[in-house]
Image (cartoon, rainbow, N blue to C red; front, side):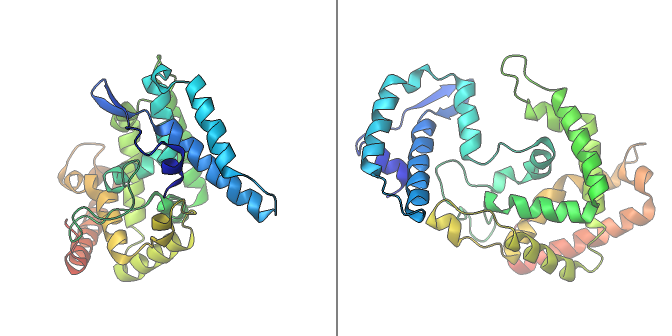
Length: 280
């Protein structure tokens, strides 16, 4: 039984309120408290200290009675949900991983594919390794420059109501789009030997997986299928840009040789997708 389930009464319904067209799971605070109790009890046990988790759960239930969930604003609930989902990332990391969001499991679910042969789901445990790999391929100075750009763009799109970034606006910003395109081109430039670089990416991410909070997460491993799905998602927006002739397009900014190289990369990636049965 999960920590969250142990905190909730067995027959307690999960109240979901639709706000502004978005479903807001107001049980997120319960889950966070339950996870904290489990985490604290485990750490105390490692130190040889006795902790009565049942007593802590009782105190937590009393605490929630004095802080009814219905008084939480939608934005506060969304903030808690983002933290629980591991989405509270710095601007650069959030922008880099944004294309992967459809492949991440939703809050309360566990890694596992809805359509196993076409859409292997990823785990947020891969984020540290992915950022490490991208930084390595960009070089530290260039990565730091992009981090400053990401922070500036994000600062320009803060909600006046909540002070939080409006990520749809951030991702649609011309500066973000150009930075993402340049990052994609730079990363793909390291895939001259596609299979060798793919193996390197798998090893890099697998070696830097973040700790898993659940048994399912701890058992998850980054495989070749996951790597192919990740590359497809990360570079999907670049495919149509290859044919664009705009002044700030790929051909104009990087030259015809780069466009030819990108085309070879996508051919190799599509072949890998076919081999691993991942939908292009």
